[in-house]
Image (cartoon, rainbow, N blue to C red; front, side, top):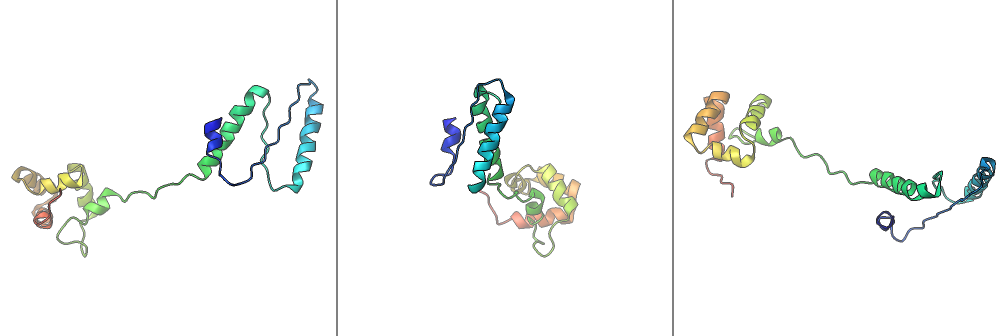
Length: 151
């Protein structure tokens, strides 16, 4: 349980209340839980977790802490679609980027920006680009990469 507790916010108050009842009488347990909840009304909201046995206390707390962390996980913004970047890898961009179709074809043919740049350098790959995209789009790509070198 230590790894979970170490993730708890440092410098903030943490309230823990434990109700243990080894008696068979479930009414007694209910009364203890009700008493605890009524005393907690004066305190800022404290989540109440129910563990049906001593053995289930730690797993219950661990699950609760995991759920808390899921709520506050940092979610990185989605990366731009490669087609959005590829559409601007032509001499006509940014005023006239490649069409969505042409950008999709390029991402199918070239698996990285480096691969796209290399495709504009060899005659075999240029022919392949021209076959799928036509000579005008291919020339626009070749002209764009003419003075660019990816290191």
